[in-house]
Image (tube, rainbow, N blue to C red; front, side, top):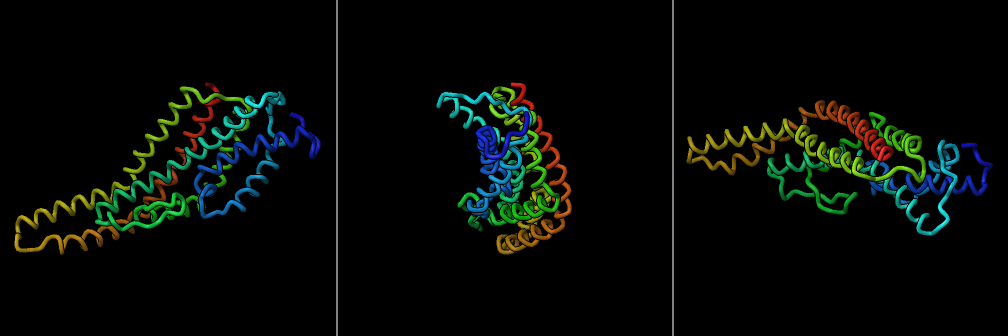
Length: 262
């Protein structure tokens, strides 16, 4: 595609269509779509991305639908493509929060909840802590730029107005979602196994020393052991997050390829 003159009709159309996919990405992607970032910041950032990317995207189809239904279909399609790319990366953070919820439940923090600003709902204290820590690791590993790179690459593989959300794309979405549960178990495994062994040990003590009030002893003991293992497993979380982020990037590429080949 030849670069259009500034402020021409083609230039404006390119920016508007590009802005739709970027907007869908900003709704679901971690960090970029976080509710802590106000809309008055997100909108200018998305517009700057669209102005930088739109006019130079190769493969842009100049044949814009003439009917209102056709334009609406294109708009929904572009928003869906951007949302699915952000969704693929968001599954990693959902897995981390899920692991924290499972660990918090075993530690005895079932009723210790905080308000999550992203969903405006109550979440586990350990889950929110792991989520915030994962967000910091994402910034340290330059993952926010990695997500933008995946979004920009999608324009080369799926030009505006192209690609189909068919069975292949749905299959990749299911695979990414399934991986989320496996990742949650991997992240929470060290603490879950340790706390399970603690429960077994407390059960043995309760049987051998019946006069001991195991509930009074076990509750603070499990909390203390849980925090010790949580601190000791921080390096493991960083390494696992880095490897899983790479896997999510590969899964996102496969999702884009599935939409392209559908």
